[in-house]
Amino acid sequence: MSRFGKITALFSFFLFLAGLPISLQAEESADSSASSFSGSLRLSGEVEHFEKSNSLLNPSNILMRPDTRAEAFLIGNALYKGIGGVVEAELRLSYEYFSGTSKTYFEDQSFDTQVNQLYYQTKSGPVSLLLGRKKVRWGVGYSYSPTDLISQLKNPEDPDDRLNKIKGTDLVQLSYNNENSQLDLVYLPKVNWSFDETFISYNKYAMRWYNFIDPVDLSFVGSVDEEGEWAAGINTSVSIGKALELHAEYLYQSSNNKRYPDLYSNASDLTIPFFFTKNGGIHDVVIGGQYTFENNLNLTLEYLYRSSGYSNNTFNAYVNHLDYLNADYQTSINPLPALAGLQESAINFDLPLHNHYLFGRLYHPDVIDGVSVEMYSLVSIADGSGLFVFMPKYEKNDVYEVYLRVKKFWGKNDTEFGLVPEDLSGIIGVSLFLGN
Image (tube, rainbow, N blue to C red; front, top):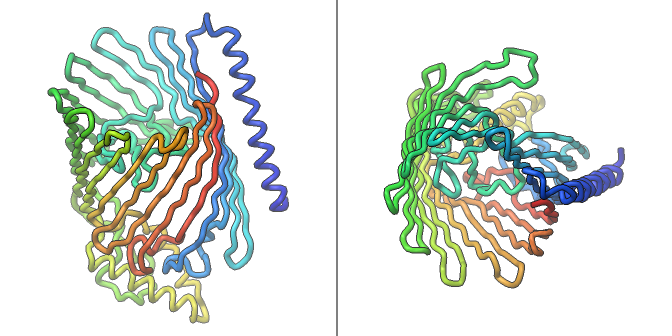
């Protein structure tokens, strides 16, 4: 199919999805008085253009990063009250198209159906039982929450998951709720829904003890899996007046999954693997707060610490290895070993790479009638590189919204964010909201 045909298919898919919420809303309104069902639909479409950077990870665009991305997706939320409890669901349907240039022009497309949430919850006095897939929020941080042991819902690059791509976790949760406290006990099996292998292949358990000690929220969390790996932490938040909120999180994990370059090998070594794991536990810390001014301007500031990050020596070894791989890839008669090394280095490029970061966000919900503006930034204290996002949005009576989103990475090509293959991206998008 031609490039024009792909765009036409995307537009047709968008129109098809647009018809679904209209018919569903009509059916629902006809019998809304007798129904215990409520639901909402969000239909979104956006086009994104990328400007690639001069990244050491991606010479000649070997990673095949796209120049253009177009996506249409439908988010359906449903809530049913009955059968002794509540059933809640969130479904995501999407079509995505990519195109770009590496050594030659390339394009790709994908259709995806994802069940983000589908669970049943029932209560009897202070005891409640939850069964199914759910996004569980235990942490208190805005940009990152290490104590979200069930579902990791926060990412400094996109703290609000604006595309609803995060999927909940399959679980069984038993909770006991007292007046100012709650105890959650959670079983987290790894479920194979394709039924082509063992249905439950892995077991994990978690707990949270939440307490409200006016005006402080305090939670203790922990988890352990069948292999004996465990995590434990604490989070707290406090509201001071109506404008100021402060929060903090700490988590210790007994294992570390990050991979590190081999400091004992020469940077010119083409041996694979060049990256290895380390033994020992890791610490994560988030300290921050937010303040809302009288004009409704909201300021959020956070400090993030991750002990698993690269030291300066480790990061320099990583960059030196990339320098050599680039030179060998460009000049060698046989570039395949260097290409394999670059691909391995890209696989292990897992942001954030360093230890210390600052996150800041400004948000105003109503700069002028119907227009909100959000901007936020994440900066690596180690080398001053970072990212910046600017997003104005116009919303009309909770019916539709139109938005722009610009994301910029900065830093020299031997800094953390300077290694990101994209330099700048711009998005224009629209969303329609229907339902109740």
